[in-house]
Amino acid sequence: MRRANPAVQSANWCGSVAHPPSTDKIKNMHGWFQHPSCSSRPGVASYPQAAAAWVGIDGDLWTSALFQSGTVCKIDNSTGVVRNEAWWQWYPSGAYTISSMPGELDCQID
Image (cartoon, rainbow, N blue to C red; front, side, top):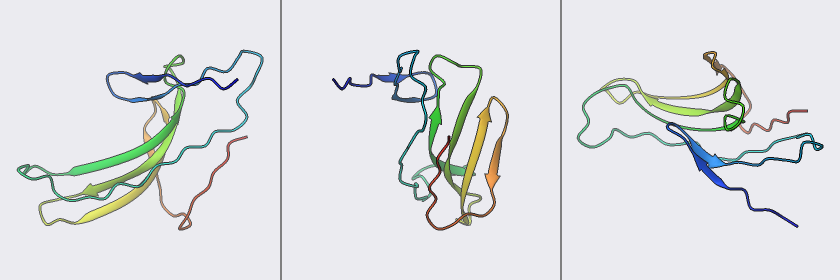
């Protein structure tokens, strides 16, 4: 029988949470999102401005360590210069920018 994953949210994230039985190990994870596009927010004159999308593993029950990876679109200044970046992070440590990658990225964690 398939169980519905509950929708969960906190002060800074929301999503679906799956809790496998303790006898089952999670062997792989797949996440999908569309990279955001950037345009200056109407009526907002401060920069930088950014939009990000990402997926993460845990953060619900195990809050002291979280692996996450995603992309961000940044408008650096009022000239409208846009930068697109991919990144990964073992939270609470800082994020690292992925400097080069193929046009389509498919990752599997074993």
